[in-house]
Image (cartoon, rainbow, N blue to C red; front, side, top):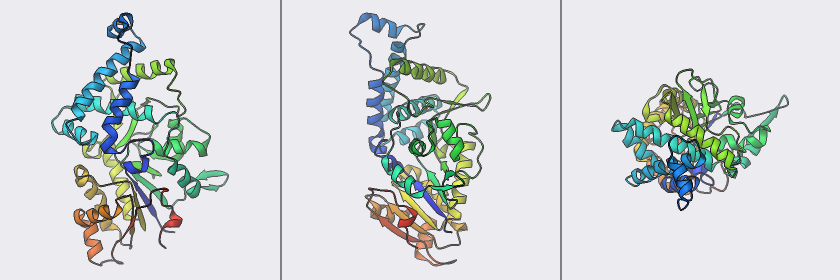
Length: 355
């Protein structure tokens, strides 16, 4: 049975989560809308500015200030990931934590209730199998993702009759997950940049989830109050650490994720890259990931599914040493084969791949 590894980039979620070039503006707009209060009403404004009063207005007022900070900082860079890298390199870790917190709030907000790219649904209907009265993935399929969204998890709701994110993580084997964020054992999906909306309590290793019910009704003001209160408490307590953990931060969780991803690629017969453009700021980590092909003694085929697949193919050959070596020179059982696919209406399924 051929081993198939899917590598997911932002383009795999674009129906519901914006790609990098649009992410900052979309995030700013959504958080400003969430934080909107009627400042013409003096009573409401006074309530919002009162640090001692626990109110929806105060939480929104604080969020608006932080969102404006984010907008000012993000305008200096091409992408939110580049902003994060700059804050990390310059040692502005408090600002980096705030950025991750805001990203987490935005990601959970924009993806509820059950907002997912429907290409996942079509893909799952094709790939999932029923065995011993249980729905499961075939053992030969694994997923690696650079995305910190929960599109994969949300799309599984239709196949589990379960809308609780923590339970979906546990049932399906996703890393990092809500129960064992620092442990990993043969996950179906490994996220190289972690997951937005999850926060590790460093004191007891438990995970706090910003929105656990994927059918969360965000139009309800009581729900808005509960989430913004939770957001405020997490943000103000240094014991909490966001599980958006960029691969280049080299945290233990990130290093574990990379190790597992490399293991999957080292055994792959086919690698399907969906919606990932190999951005320059991630080149070092992408090279580290594909270095795993040194151990792959098969003749793997790499499929690139993206509207700009031909350009990405050329970038792969030019920038990634192990791929360049295997494409141009035969050794082992033969060279790597690169196949571009520009039709992105549906994700490539195992049945679509060359035998």
